[in-house]
View (cartoon, rainbow, N blue to C red):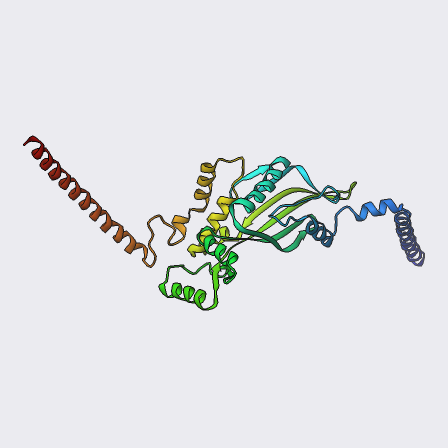
Amino acid sequence: MHDISRAARSMHFTEAFIVFLLVCYLADGFNSCSSKQRRLLSMSVPQDDVLVQRVSSVLSTYGPFLDIPSTQKRVAVSENVVVTTDYRSTRGIAEYEALKTDIVRANNNDMYGASYCTTRVASLSPTRCTVNFNASFIPDSISSLAWTAKNIPVFKLILFDLCDRERARSSFSWEKFKQFLARIATKGEFYLPQAVIQGQLELTFDFDVASDTLVLVSQKEKLNLIRSLDTGILKNRALATHLLEYSLARRPSSVDLYEWDGMVTYRLQLYKRVPGMGQFDVDGLEGEKQNELLELGNKFLGYGVGLMFLTSLMFGAVVLDKLSN
């Protein structure tokens, strides 16, 4: 029995010694790797902070897209990049370049006082990140007032945004209008609401280990106001108007004007979702009262047309009688 126990202990010791030698061999083999092999192993996936730094360095100051200079070799756009917005999806680097051109054209021609800024870049994974942005402009409805305040020295333009008033229903108020005029008369200040469209890009990259390059393969753009609209939060007519104006200005050059207008109208359906955006909506009246007013107007219109028709007949009869005599 003692011989068997001694043999078992000797066998366990031998197995442990073999495992120890194997571990030492593997460790020595890893340490003997060349410096180039180690660099490739460490570069197989970039670190999160590296992704954020590289993306931040090529973000455009004109709109939600990457503006990569020719000297930049660490970030590139794939030939088959997929771009998705709230209205459509496209594929190909040619479409991506057209998107950049269309955004710059919209800023220069279709949106007065347009500006764009990136507010945050955050990594979701070593090859995915999000980019939060703000696009600002002065709406058409107040562009003449803003131009006056900017170009006449005695006046001062003060802009504010309505981003925190998504749930508030906007309506005309004589009291607010008087305050607006009083502020101009006493202080020379035009206190006007600017349009601020907040959105987010989700960028997905492939990492080319050989060239140490991040290659953009997917860009998804989502606007915060459209999310609020889809969830039933957006009730502010002014914000809905800003969203509509921004969306129409972002028309791709490859899409016809009337076709794009139909796409935007169908996607947003503001006349159904936001109070006051209907064609015959009246400030200060709820839906039922507006319907009653429309029915009353239709009745008066019918009576008025009938009365005009009878008056015309009587006038024509008088004229014919005078001519016959």
